[in-house]
Figure 1: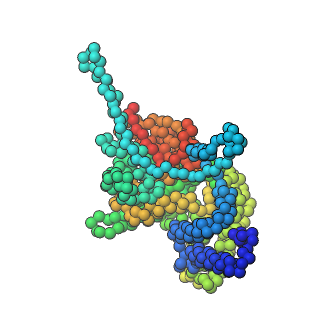
Figure 2: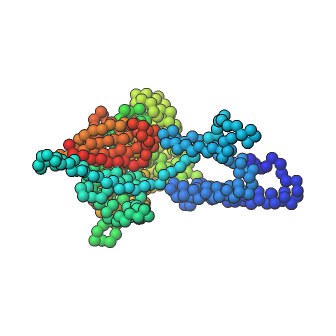
Length: 544
């Protein structure tokens, strides 16, 4: 073991004490390891979801750290050895962070032997990560009035700056901070009000809600423009997820739905930046999807939900002129469910189906990131023969199974959707699954988990609007497709807004129409002008 001293105690009593302490430490670590294994690999009924698992692992890591701290206090040699290991394994701090240099000089600067002057021959340097806690401040805007002593009635004064909320208390930066905390970090407004109160700032939750709703209305043109940009794409992933919404007058919640459009062309080296648009609807029927996708002509990548087929049915007067590509991940999950529910008994058909699908995914892993033409050629050469063999195998196995069994239902689902499942073989722009849009749904579920429900339909619409902008800015910042520019555009009321987009992508070379300035900072690197990257987004407005 790495923590054993170079020499063991020679005294029997000291050796027994050392062995007892070592056994006690091993017992504690074994117990913590068992907890981690149970949380990660336990029976399906006892497994935790990803967020709960992280909480368990955090507590276990804290317990191990507390054990090490106690041992470091008891044994200086162990503490020194571990300090060397920590310095070796901790990695480098990001270069864009500002450095505050503290120089610690010896108390004596003269030689203790001859009292001569000392000079520097080198230095030791260490770096630690520090934080400056959030600080609220008051911006006082003074507009002096200037008058001429010689001329009567001449008074000059700078025009009052345009504000997001005229006569309101917050700066645009503070409103942006509140929105970011609610929809990016999933902090409900009542918790933010409590946090403000700890700074001695008594702002009610309803006031914060007014700020958010006001900003959402101002940002609506940007959401519309983002939707227009995505609907001009050749391929979109579409999904929907339930969201509880308070139903006034009934004293309970009703089920609404968040629909999502997602574009992510990076797997086939596409030039268009990623983007996400959410929209709230009171249901998940075809009429709601048609409203969101109105006018779209392209590939709709989705699951096998019947509403998507209805939207493209030619018998409808308002049908979309789109092609449906279906998701292999949804099919694979059905086989996983069959195998899990059959355990401990074997499920040979489900097991072999999963292995065959895994072969298709292995080919995709090799082709990911290549150009569409190269992906299509690789799929034709390697994946198409496997897919054809898989279809024949599905058809053969279907005849051997009880037709009402879950396995037979899954095989019929696969064969019924086969054309859409294999559309990706002929088009290198299409992925095998809709994981991109499913990942985009996670922030919605996290916010819903913390807020429990939306207060009304209008509140859910604002939620969808603001989450669209935040998630789009986030996914672009993550992949460093960013630029810094200043643009001016008129909003619906004729007022011009100056946008300072810190890390928002240029889309098709066109300015992105902000109602309020969006400057979502990238997590890595620096913004234009050498300023450090931060979190959140800032707003600034002015008259034309």
